[in-house]
Length: 217
Image (cartoon, rainbow, N blue to C red; front, top):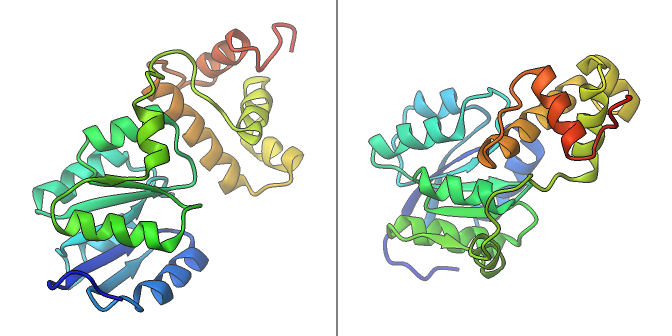
């Protein structure tokens, strides 16, 4: 399974251990990619004895709450190419990630072969995104409220309606950490779209304006 003559030294960062383990097994089947680190935090990556590497495959939404733009800037300063993975692929977020220095952006729902293509392209200093993502980010979908998933809308409605994070988690049958991750994602989507919902009051106001929450709630 090799097409490039040069071996790419790869590090992966994802706080979902099951996904990290699965990717590790898949990547090891490619002779032109040498996986030298598979860690769960950005700090672990930076302090790893084999860092810097050629390419970093990194989850956008790490639980350490560090801005992805800051992580990308740090990696770029060390000469490391970055491919981002994410469970969501809103055009605005993809655009900002690429503008911040990512050479690739791959939805986690994609096949491993696409992730490998993105890694190989980054190893050559080239950018890579799927044809579907390319169409989405160049479709002129700029401005306006971001597209939220059904679960994100539920979280925003409950939290914006005055419930604490713990209650939001209980109501939706998810962990408190997952609820916080949803809120972080919601705020990031709105920030990229040009709306500041950093406070609970601002998020509530936006939820009402976007029809997610009724004025009387």
